Length: 417
Image 1 (cartoon, rainbow, N blue to C red):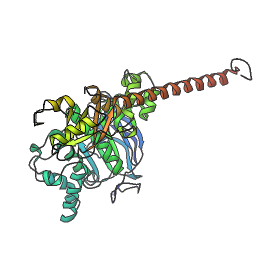
Image 2 (cartoon, rainbow, N blue to C red):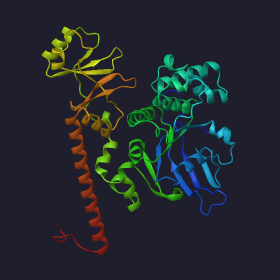
Image 3 (cartoon, rainbow, N blue to C red):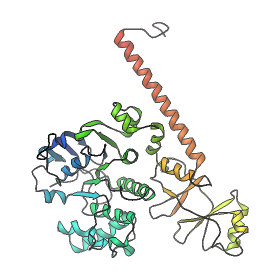
Image 4 (cartoon, one colour):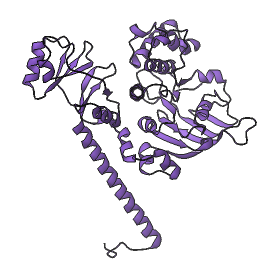
């Protein structure tokens, strides 16, 4: 039985489990080389580990051996120090969440039925299953009253992926395996789904193993990243910061690519910078009230919120002068927002595509929280680059000291320098 290690998690939830892969190997008949060759890796409880590498390197095969969708040819799998290599694979998979690209939802089942599937299989009571379905929908930001009875075909791609994650988490497993789960959605939806996963992990503290071919996604999501060569040989297994600042070899450097300093924008979240207040009005406010607020404040624009307190339109003074008694056609619709779990890279992209030089920050249901502007982002970038320069200088100084120790040389300027 795979159990929790008792680490802190959400209220009443099972937290993460340690995972150990010992010499894991997969050979297919008729092939000269193994698809996965002697992989050993230790993953901490509650950690998000990303497997990233070129196409065909064996990262998905490695992932699928953890829940034995693919049976290993040799090696051992331990979860919380329990050897599960010879455990009944069906029983094992019911205790490990699994989310894939395009959600994998059963089209003939409603959203509620899809989420309830594994809890029913493991013997939960009807009332407990019903409560869990509602809890899971709420957790991934979907209104249970609106989505419970829908079918997958009635959902957008992003909504389907959210339901797929809810289904993977429904039986409260300590481990969640994710195989390129956001690869089939558009870039904006993908950013929001990544942010949602980060928020969920802050609440749940599961052990997540996540496969992607996108290094920027790996940086954004991972506590640690395993960069894999062919046959899943580990080129480097380290934190995103360590890989960006000190790649192990040319293969890793090539995978990181150019602009490592800018990629570090994926390591800092919007919640880590100042989220400013901004004057707001609602769609139900009288036109004269909106006009008075705009004229009396320091800003030359307002943010209009809809009836659910979500960003709707940016209104400028000129828009109001042309309104002629109605705001229906006035202002600029809000196209981009970011959450507090979005990265500074996401925020900077949104700001650069908006002529106003700012982006609205929203909560889990899209409700307005505040704004982040270009000045705040540029200050953060400058601080980050300065910290990188200082780290590089300290590293060079440390290397110089090590060389002097090896050669017996004194520092320049004499022994007292």
